[in-house]
Amino acid sequence: MAEQLTKSDVEKIEEEIRYRKLVVRKEALEAVKEARAHGDLSENFEYHAAKKDKNQNESRIRYLERMLKTAQIVSDESKDDEVGINNTVELYMEDDDEVETYRLVTSIRGSSLRGLISTESPLGKAILGRKLGDRVYVQVNENAGYYVEIRSIDKSTGDEDDRIRSF
Image (cartoon, rainbow, N blue to C red):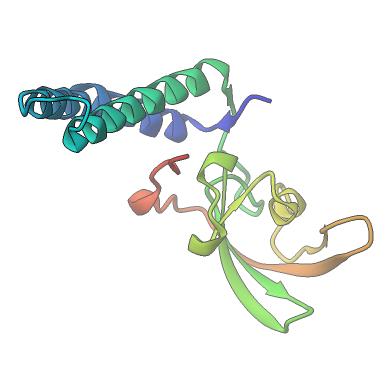
């Protein structure tokens, strides 16, 4: 299945690819050359570590380029009173009697530990496109779920620390 990416996601991925090709690749090649100069390659840990780093960088570049080729571009625009991608929402969790804040993002940027909820997650699917004040049932599995109420929607993007998650 193709990843869903916003224009902002695409820009961040392209930026990472450029950085990896222009900076990381050059550093990795230099590290391999330097380690090779140390002599016997069969017992040269630095050489093997440098080669591994170089190969990991090249793999990451290929992964990101393949992701861009197969990606489905989605809009992060939504109506003022509607939850959309890149919106921060305050949700009242009825079961816990607590208000929690999340930002709805595409699947490659999802990180529940940082409050970034993927549009592919049960919570993300349930609130995407919903309106301020809506009470929404979040289906977790066939037998379980919970209710949330959308208390606020913040449309500011807040891209300060939205690096694409490395795999």
